[in-house]
Image (tube, rainbow, N blue to C red; front, side):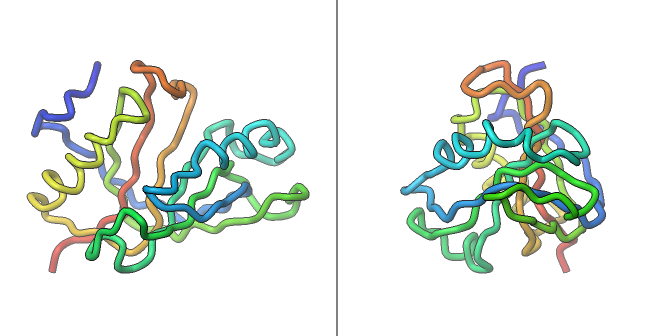
Length: 168
């Protein structure tokens, strides 16, 4: 089923996740200085060095400054990670770093389409979130790039995790 991003009936599922451990690589970037290709070009050929990965799912995690969404600036820098989940940090390959994701509540949007189409994020932040009972929480955002993810393919699928908390 293909997502129609303009459809106001796209409904997320919600999940409270526990703390997770990851190993991978990171880079500092902005929307105007997008280094995603560079990050994944470096990570993908080396991901098999992570011998204790929980699964083959790749996590694309973004750590934004606290005011990132209140004072939107396309030149604002944030940290982006390419990671695999691990049970512990006992085996960290050279050139890779550990990352711990704090647990919490996430709104999960299943997305099917081109990874370069930003309309899903416009929908989430400009339509769904303001009209929901939730607000952003100050934790990392991430996408899970699983078995149905295909870079630059309109049939690609991924799950987008947005950290949320109930509005006061």
